Length: 363
Image 1: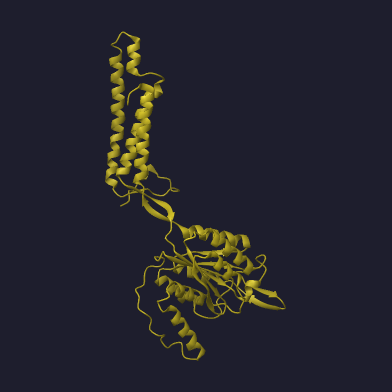
Image 2: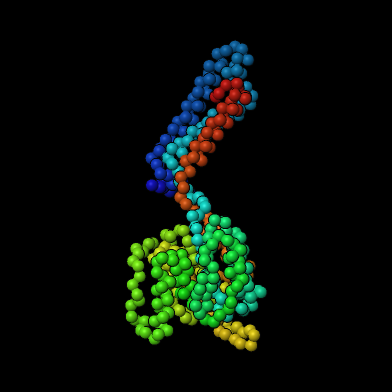
């Protein structure tokens, strides 16, 4: 249950709306102004009693030693302590960045021929390899990472592992190929995450039927039944797919995205290269390439993830840095009653300590 602040208080829009599990206890905060009034009444009563004594020393003793502000500081701190403890009793909650329970990340990386283009220095492939290696360094050591390389087909370059050296070796082994099968990359990534779900067998059956010239209208072999879950709800794994072109063969990436969404797996997409389309030439031959941003955005949206565009090597590095923090830290609504209780205890101790130091008594 969330506590809604009255409109006239105008809680700043830039700050997260505070919430409380037991908001009914907030009414106890009305005791604070009553305590302030009681304190003021006691101070006035003390002054009236003090004027009855003839000795000025006795009057000073009654009023307290030192500057006037010292007399009021311990009670003020005690009032703050009570306020903090009353807030703690309402069990406040807030969005707090906590370590994610992400356990496996699949890097699906485009190795089609257009990745040799030098519009991203030194070229797209090397920039992607360098950014991926930096990404591995930033990840916690307990996060497994797998590598899927794709062009006209997709294959697992490295099964999920904690060994960063094996991952770097797999990235360095990339060989450029023709065509781009972004959908296949997602399917193979899912098959790697769920090796017992029959996903890889379904994809092989699809390729076999196409190669034999059989009608694709024929229903595919029956899969093991599973219950679809909400998109993005599977928090133990994620897929990051980097590509510089549009799909030219293989599974439709939107169909593959639906498979990922039904399993709750987020597919973060990263686009590099030319958005409008351009003819890129190298080593005596040329090819027309265009980044299909709309499809990449759609894939990310359907899986409750995000799309990123990187026009330079530095942009690509920043994208991976952002993904590293996003995948290893997540904001969760967490009860913070203990923080308010601790603040209240510290204020109470400070109030008692200052009172003993200045007046040789506890308030």
